[in-house]
Image (cartoon, rainbow, N blue to C red):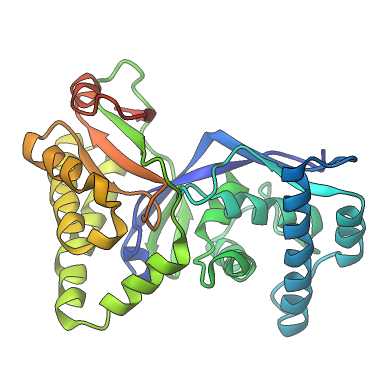
Length: 312
């Protein structure tokens, strides 16, 4: 074992919007986790991960050459450990929107970055933004372009409030009411999605003035309201805004919702039994659900796999 466990994350609110400066709220999800390990002989999965780490180390070397002011690594030790059979042992499903590459980035930074910012320090806004910038550059290896939020969440294991691109802070969220009927849940779409093609679709849509207007006047407006409602525990207002948000996503982000779920998405809005939203970039993986009555939602979604992550 090469050090601590790093957990998956759930971006409750802010997918796509944070690219355009909406608010966002990201929470750690401790059900899935990963850690760097060394194993000889290696299983097939370990070999594949080891090969991936090899390629990642080449990318990090290049990143260090390009921007030594940002971050440098103990590459000698990293490469020696990879040669000795190190791999990332993870239960976080890939392509599911819950931060599988983020946990890996956090683990590599923790073990091999020089002068690293630690979780035990007084984490000022400057330090958080610096970490986010480092993680964004590191995770770009996997996604082409990354905000750095997933690794940040995994590294700190704290809820993170995004007020705007240059204003982020760790935050607290209302404690769970384990007897509560309200819940946030994950719905398994049964297929993995890829981030890069979904982000590409979004960027193409952003070229249309009509879509930009919808994003600003509806999507970001309801996202910001949801973040504020959730943090302040204003549940009745939260569900009103969630319904609107779910509606906007169904109407304007259809390519990001797997086809098989269009009808289910609509039924949730019409019946008020649950509201669905994207978990990460969409296209597959998990779909995020919110309900005021989990028993009612389970009945309406009979035959689907639901995983409760938070109770109201």
